[in-house]
Image 1: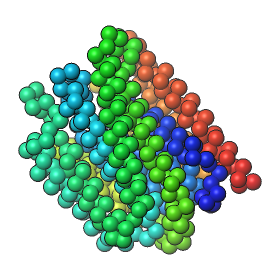
Image 2: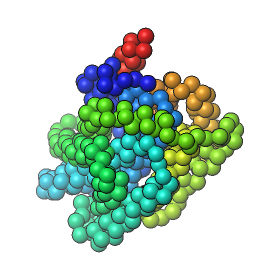
Image 3: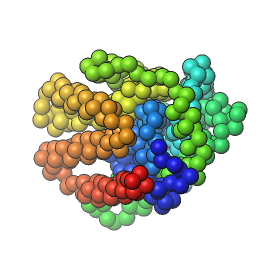
Image 4: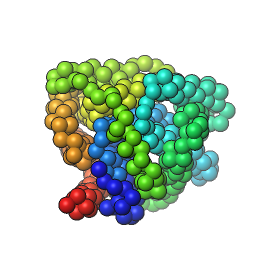
Length: 435
């Protein structure tokens, strides 16, 4: 395990790598996924990037990856399309930008809190974790019912198809989670991750919204200037930068938690092979069905809490939540596009292919789990390339079906090149120290 007191990685890499990774992850989310399931893409990617920088190789890495995916997925329940519309209208631009900054800050607060919690868990008592997640769900309901449902503070359009918001619910849920896990005893590491992400998320969404507003009010042809993608890249950049800075400043403290986690954690999976894949497939199918078909405003908070509890105690399933579940969600998004938007194939065939590919990714992940020294970086690459290949297929389908001008694809290629170069730098520095 890397000695983080003498980290092989300088501060600029600790900050830049997660920032660029999450920026690209958020661009993936806006193109091949949506809602909380799509937000799991940048969540899983940035969690793996942090683990790689911190040199973690203990059994808890899967849990951290799952907490990153699910925890940052929570914010995907917020609606902000109409808030962007308010920010793009010069008559309501200030209110719209305030709404975007607030929603980005809430997204960062809850996601950062859960990443910090995962990184600092040394021993997870079931009763304490159940109570903490229960308080998060309760707080989410109270905030939603008390502020969002009656539209006391509202950042969408009251007159034209008003959207049901949930930002206040997620805010109160995050506060409840922080009080339970970080207030007594005081856990400054969790508070730092949550606080920095609160600022980074708010700045990223606010500045990204301002960029989008300026672009939409300019004379530039939006067909060749993808302002919405610029907003996504900006949000991910600042959010990831905040997480990277928190990890850098807490790297020595986190090393102590890593040692305790490695020696005390006793919950190891006994699943192997096809049995594990079958259980994972059922879990993923049930979770996605719950998200798509159960109709209440914060349904993902409920299923997400269940997934987090599973991730704590079954290491193998934690990895499948972070990688297989996330991949299956964006493969389903592609399947829906190929079948329903562009009518290339029947929906049943598209979904079947998506399930088969997800199963192959799960099988590959199982093979990687047998190599713990390389598991974090290889899982990162597996998710990265799976998302990029799906992005490439979707771009090709749009060009073929709609004569789409793939301007945003060039942005993906540039961001992929930046992530690849930074990842090579991380690997080279770690290898030099290990020699």
